[in-house]
Structures are given as structure tokens and as C-alpha cells.
Image (cartoon, rainbow, N blue to C red; front, side, top):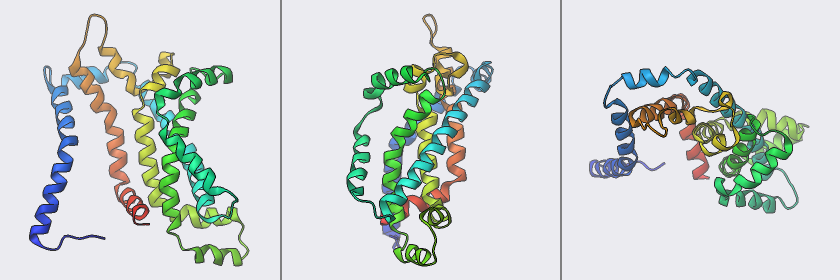
Length: 262
């Protein structure tokens, strides 16, 4: 891995990283400052005092957990198949999956709406979980396949000689060795599922099914627009993601680094 050894190189590297971080840091600082303006910490107390907040957190957690489970299972199986199994035409299927990366969420709203109505899952968690998982899987497969490519083929040949089936090889070799990239997939999927605003807004019409990203609506109306509470809601919404990243930071960085090197 690249390492800056000289003092000048370290200063230049630190300066470059600082400049790269600033465009992302200023909006966060502005958001926190705005959430504390006016009534200060009372803005958070009022925001957390909304009776629907625990319900919104529960709904977001259910949707995020369901999306992560589907993305993890499908991604790991697909990455294993595309990387190590001999499947006729697998490169064609792989590029077909990557084509889905070009489809923005908003373009899919009309067909998704018609599909959820026909399947009878409109205004349920599945109406959000399934599209979110489908949108996250292509990028996750791209990352994970590169990581699995880095696992030596000799290891798979050895377990094959010992008589292990493809299922046992996946369970005892692929799953344990892909924990770093699995952490990266988990973080990316959590951020995508937790922060998604459009799909819950369209497909979850019942207040009891809505997510935490819809909390700012309580402070925006025809005769009110309390931006301090809206910013406080945004800060509260971001806390679970920050905690998850801090807990999985080492595995997350290892997973991305290994995939990038390969």
C-alpha cells in the first residue's frame, strides 16, 4: 500500500485529503449549527417528542434489516458464482446486472407502482424492501466479485479434491473470508435503505408504516416551515448510520481496499 515517508509528502497528502473532505464537511457543520439555532437543544427535544418517532425508527430498522438480508444473500451467492464457478455465459449475465446501475430510482416509479399494486404488497414493507434491494445488488455484486477474485483458486481446488460440494465450499470458505467486503456491503446498503425518501413516500401511505426520513414533514406545512426542527430531524436520522460505520470501520476499509487492489 502507498505510504508517504517524507515530511513534505506527508504534509502534501494531509493537505490534499483536507481539501477533499471540506466540501462534504461544510454542509454537515451547517446542518448541525442550523439545528441548534433558535431554541438550541430544545429543537431536538421537541423533535424527539413527536409521538411517531419510535414507530418511524422501528419501520426504518425493519426495512433496512430486510434490505440488508436480501442484498447480502443475493450478492454473496452471485459473487461466488461469477468469480469461481464455471457457468456458461456468466460474463453476459454479469454485465446485464451491471446495466441496472444505469437505472435511476425515479424512472422505475411507474412500473414499480403498477407491480406492487398487482402483487398486493402496496403500503407494506415489501413494497420498499424489494425495490431497494434490487437497486443495491448490482453495485454490491461488482464490489464483492472483485474481492472473491482475490481468494486463491488453489484453495477452492483443494476443498474440491476433498469432496466438498459447491454449497459447503460457499459456506465454509466464501462466507468467512468475505467478512470485510460484507461489512462494506452492509454499510452501503444500510445508508441506501435508511436514507431513502422517495420509495417510502410513494409506497407507504399509512402513517403507521412510514419511515424516519419522513419525520421532517411534521414541521413543514401550509402555514409553518420550521427549518430548525427539519435540520434536527436530519441529524437524528443520521446518528444510526454513523454508529454503524464506526462499529464496522476496520472491516469496511479492509473490504474496499482489497477489492480495489484486485
